[in-house]
Image 1 (cartoon, rainbow, N blue to C red):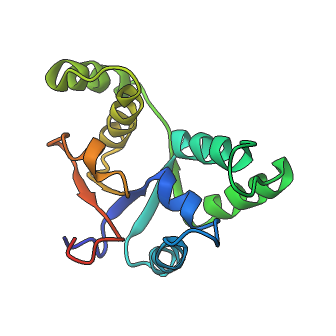
Image 2 (image 1 turned 60 degrees about the vertical axis):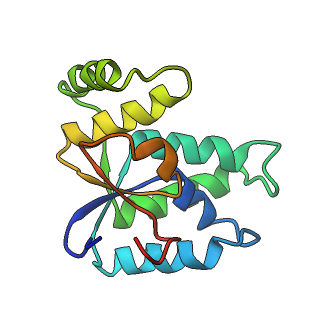
Image 3 (image 1 turned 90 degrees about the horizontal axis):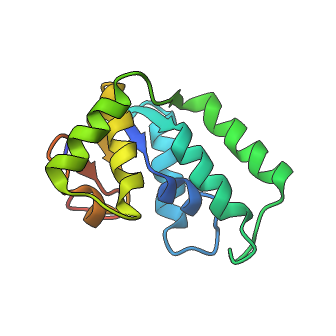
Length: 150
């Protein structure tokens, strides 16, 4: 999939892997983040991605939890090279339509809300390692930087 020059939402899992030097996905994540910052694409994150990332990185079950100060330094650095988007007036209407179309329930509602936030901000591509849960949404394209055939 060609992503050069396009707006691309970077999902929380990539953000988390880019901090976790023990992750087998760390090197690819860091390379992808650097390439995005160097204008491979126009990197975007949603408020939801920031919140999910903070939750995971500060959780006591995370293998090496960050302090509040460390995680805020990281999120501040994200804000410097990514456009940060938020839900808007259209998001809820798009969300309702997606919920009906795809019969989304339970924890998948948050993926649906992220897609609705993307669409209401005119973002059509997401970079994620969570292909399985997001590929059902025909309205977006899913790019997995860990899969060389993407």
